[in-house]
Structure formats: structure tokens, C-alpha cells
Length: 238
Ligand SMILES: [Fe+2]
Ligand SMILES: [Fe+2]
Image (cartoon, rainbow, N blue to C red):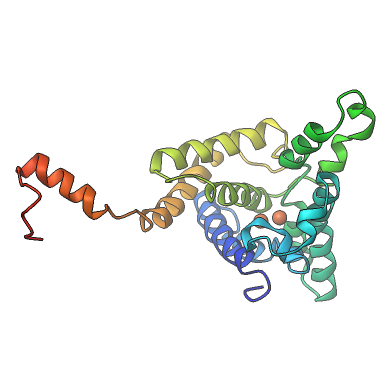
């Protein structure tokens, strides 16, 4: 995976770390969650160039319509199960591969398809279920935590200048959405568990993004020097 799908590999390590930390907090099997995180996206290896985290290098990405593209991405779940079964992975790990997207909808492609379609005929041509993962929904705490870590890690990559405040908002929005969409209904997580899970995720995310703070430019430093210390532009004592 590190060679064929390096972005997915990085993502999987992050998901594993986040899921492990969260499962420790709620007394779930954290080692199982960690390993589930490692394997959850192995189905992306065959078409790795079609996924945003690997930089899209596959030429098909430019020609596929939203329905076909969504179908290909959804197939990473069944591909993953196939690879795992072929390689003899245990059922407890296959469970993560099979259920980490639950029955969620690929909103991006669904929206794109609706937009592109002629409004008069949209209803008959576009079916929401073509943009939905087949499920089932997570049925253990560990898989549900990986589902949340997965969605949050992926979304955190698109945050512009991630601050602690923005990360906190993102984490609670995604947990709320999954809860609201019913994806967590079989997972045996209490509200208090979910609070602990969110805190653990934030601890990890803040640790990662903290190290990526941008340094101020030379002109930004000079501007403040002039204002605060009353230096003029000719001083060159830095
Ligand atoms: Fe996935
Ligand atoms: Fe993932």
C-alpha cells in the first residue's frame, strides 16, 4: 500500500491512531480498532489513482460521469473484502472493511449528478441508491469508531489553515451527521462514549496539525517590528 497508494497508506495510519486512542478512552478493544484502521481501505489499492488522497493520476478520472465514478469508489469496499478473504484475514478485520462506510451516501457525486442532469428527467435517471454504500452499518464500537475516524481524517485534510477551533467544529459536525443519518444505531455507543471519542480524536488531530503551523514571512515580522518597536526599514539587525 505504501508504494501503490501512499496517500491511502498515510490516511490509514492516522485512522488507526485516532481509533486506537478513542477506543482506549471508552474501554473498547483498542488493538482491534488499530488493526482495523490499517486494513479498512485495502480495497483502494487496485484503483489507487482514482482517489483524491493519492493525487488523481488515473486518466479515467477525467472521463467517468458522476454515477460511474461513484460506483468505482463504492467498489473499494467489495474489493477490500475480496482481497482480505483471498489473503486469509480474520472475519473480525473483514468486518471493518465491509462496514466502515455503513450505508452512507456519496454526497459529492450525487449532487454533481443531480446538477448535470436535465431537471425534467432527473427523477427517473438518477437514483440515490446508486450513490450509496451497500452497508451494513457498523455493529461494534470498534468499527463505528473507525467509521468516525475515517470520515473526520479525510475531511480534516481539506480544512484551510486548521486551528483547534476549526477541528473541534469539524469533529462534532461529522459525529452529529453520522448519528443523525442513523449510521451509529447498531454500534452500542452511548452519548458519553461519543464525547470521549471526540476528545480523543481532537487530541490526536491537534497534535498533528500543531506541528504544521506556518511561519511568519519576513515582511510580516518587519511590519510588526516597525509598529511595536518603532524600527524603520533601514535597520538590519536580524
Ligand atoms: Fe473507505
Ligand atoms: Fe478510509
